[in-house]
Length: 560
Image 1: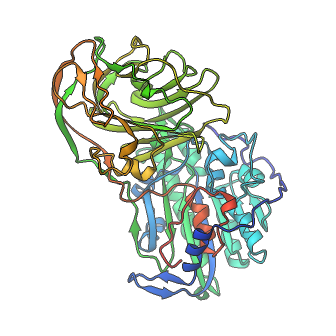
Image 2: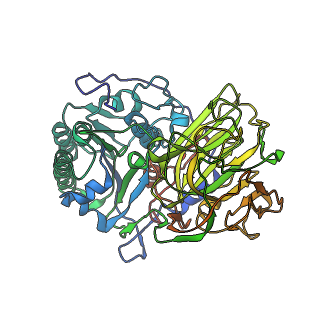
Image 3: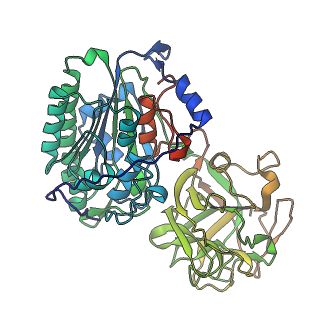
């Protein structure tokens, strides 16, 4: 996915009026007020914050976190002892740079800022401007600067700040940043480096690709010079700098080159580093336990008409919200067989929903109403391990969300005109609603759970690796629960209060299986791209206005 509007283009400045509400969110404002006067010292004790608040954000386009940590990058590594950081953070899909940088700078997803690729055909930065512009509105005395290699950042995303400079090389960006820190007095400085992404596209996004690794190491050298200039500032002792380092997306190797723009975990996985001299080193990790095993006697689904279904109308959801979960263990399949569905999967626009296996060993979800469809792709599942998959259809928020193995995968908007999902077809496990789809899953399907509400993220993650009991906070909304571990017979027993058993038309083979389950514990959530703008605004003590509808949260330690 090569970028357009490369740097030989001249910068085009756009002027957009900032429109915001003046009503503060009381809870957020309270949190902000409680967090303005103190910071956490390296001993973990509260200490009075001192110095003028300053911000430096270093964006490294297309830099994978595993490659950054595996390369010779002493300057980035030197930040970690005083950083809140994560190598398991996530950006939004689709993973185009236009979407990534728009999300980072505005603090909202593409569902609001409107940028899904690099064309910037329908941006909405008038309503959702960059946090730099919000800083200018909050305090026009702040010196805000954006120095970038990729022109569209300053052309489209950044507007209404003091200084915008677009350069033609990463070296020029580094030199301009050093000059700004040495000769100017920026309060908030955003930098963008592009050469790592260039190397990724040309040779592949991998630590094992020498050209990609070398580009990361060169960028780390630039970062070292920038940090030296920062610390050599005459008034540095009286300044309190927050330094943020992050990319816009990851990437994959495709043959002898690389790409991004899709929704795979490798493309969405990013790193985030929040550094300050008073921070204690805190690594935020993906809440998964790869050692958990699932053992039992499970039905073997395959191409010999082995599926289970019911005609109960409970599972035709109309225009209501719902959640469907399941676990699957498979080592292979062909085409895009249904895992759980109530629709005719011959077309994505047909009424109903489907969780299905997908080409490339991955999975996806789809909903349709005959006129519209929504699709979200997930990660790898054909590795012989158990994977927990979740589809959430939230009619109130007008969103479809997906989760895999205790981690958020992605979301997509449901248009206001989206109609009923009632297909009138059976609800099936291992088939679509017609019970005659030509492709079949080979493997085991268990822990199928259906809820007549959109479960919260916490509710999903807390029960990814455990069974559901009456103590579950949403137990009253559980309308189907087929554990699939009864070990024999021709039915799936329903363990919910509805007691709707699913029937196999042909008795399956029940096989004993032991395999690992990558499951989330729900103990914490990884940082996301939208959190950088939110954290930056909090750093300057800006009250977060509920009318801004920001999608992020702060990762700054309590007291900052």
